[in-house]
Each structure stands twice: as structure tokens, then as C-alpha cells.
Image 1 (spheres, rainbow, N blue to C red):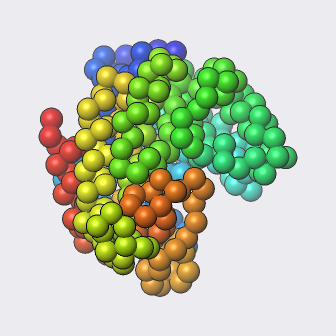
Image 2 (cartoon, rainbow, N blue to C red):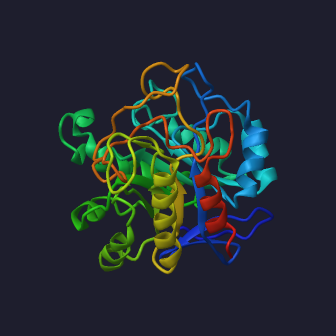
Image 3 (cartoon, rainbow, N blue to C red):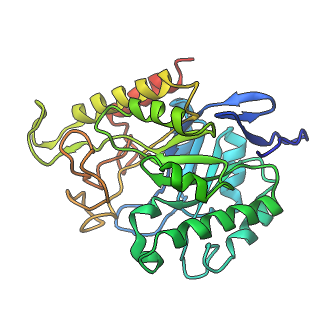
Length: 319
């Protein structure tokens, strides 16, 4: 367990299914955030000021990033806005704050006292990729457990999480006891409710949905939703998903909805919005079983609010 140290900065802890900050439960009302400009392929925080304004209006209190934020001014702006960050570390990122080289611990040491940090997160649904680990996924679980232990040695004030594809088995949980919080990328159509009961029976550690949501493009006509751009399908799916999340606060610690802005860099020409793209275990993506990777935003690439933005805002500002 990560114990909270009561200092001038509030430090999170993982305790009996909940994240606790300053003695109070912290429920993640989050969004996955990887801003890439039209025509580009690299992350760019230039629009951060406007993005934070949109996030705050929607009641978002947490962002999840897939790689460390190296610009300290970004962390400072997040803290000033009252938005915390789940910092993700990749396994092999050519030695740049990654797990394989061990340099991730340098980042932890550098920013462990920054007030924007909510927790550290190791990997993103690597259980779908044994080919990255000499075709033996147990090599990943060993690296995950050892890396979590290294973080605990350096930083006793922030939980260590991982983002697992779907719910981990009891056998996997036994292999990585050093992970404090389990994030799960869950695409079970528009109904993740059963995962909470499954988790309740499996573990008493905190969990959250590290990815959940829907895109706004229907590859086929299905379930009454027309083929093509279909923002109503996204609205209906995310509405149902967030209702399940909010109804299970006693088991789940929240959600980071996938994702803040449409990602034109993910499939085809980064200058245009293309259908298509690929993601593992995506047959549960509502309502066509196809992850059109460039259509997942709650805002479009120009930061115009899509109808689903109001769904997120209503859910996250309800209490």
C-alpha cells in the first residue's frame, strides 16, 4: 500500500479500492490526452491553454498520457488548473524515459514532488503483445513487477498503476503484487458493468477504466445507426458507459475516457480525417466492432465540441 504523506502538497494513496488524497476519496473523471496537430505526427502541447479550459468546463480532473511529459511548464499548467496527470511509461522507447533502459526512474525522481502527479503507469495493454517480449508475456509481467518495485523505492507517495487490456486474471495479479492500481482498457460494447463485479470477486485493489468510450464513425449500418460519421452513436455509447462507471463508485476509482481530441495522425494522411486504423481486441467497440482510430475525440481536431462533449460534461459535473 502507498501511504499518504501529509505535507504542503497533497499526495495520493491507494487504499481499499479507492484513491485517497488528503484523506478524501479521489474519483478519476478523466480523459486520455495525446494532442497532435493536423498534418503532424508528434505530440504538441501548444493548444494546452484552450484544452485545459475545455477540460475544466467538462469537469475533467485528470488526464492520462501515454508517455512522460518532459515540458515542466505543462505540468505546472496542469497543477494550476487543478488537473492531475497519470504519467505513462513505455517499455522500449529508444532509451527515452523507458522501462527497458531503466531511465523511467530518472523521470520519477525528477517529478515525484510535482503537485500535478496523480500516479505512475507502466505499459499500455502490453498483454496483447507477447511478440514484444520474446513471445513470452511473462517477461513483461516480470519487468512490470520489478519496475513497480523500483518506483516504490524512489517514491513512496504515489501509487503505481498499469493499463491492462481487459481484466487481468488471478494468475496475472499474483505475478505482479507491486502494482497498486489496475487500469483496464475495456471495450465491452456500451456496457462495462460486469467488469466491476468480476473485479470485486478478484481483488480488493483500486481499479479504473484506463480506456473506455466510442468513436463517431460507423463502418457499417448496425443497431439502427447509419454508416458513416455518426455522432449520435458515440453519444449513446458514452452515455451508457459513463452511467455504469458512476453507478460503480464503490468498486471502481473512475475512468479516463478515450479520448480528448480526434487523432488525424493515426490512420492514413495526417492532413485529413480518415476512417480505418487498427487496435487489438477491438470487436467490442460500439456499435460496429471497428475502431476508427481518428474519430474518438470529444472535440474535433479544431477543438469544436462534438455532441459527446456534453455527455462527458453532464456526467462529470453531476455531483
